[in-house]
Image 1 (spheres, rainbow, N blue to C red):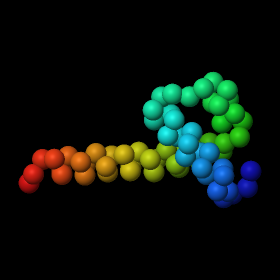
Image 2: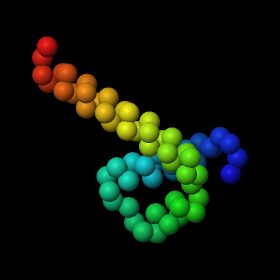
Image 3: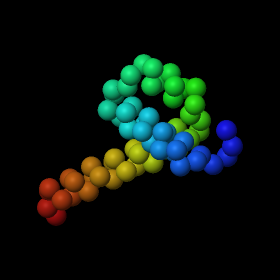
Image 4: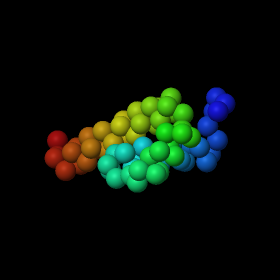
Length: 67
């Protein structure tokens, strides 16, 4: 696989990370991800997802708890 992921590869990576956050994934889909996805892309997308998730939680807490 070359440097930049294509749109489809990026979408597949985002989908794999999202399913891993939920904790539900079919074994066949997991095995397909292992064969097709670049580990560095997975790490990058997972880090972005973690920052977005934490930012959303902080925003929610600041919205619910005034001042």
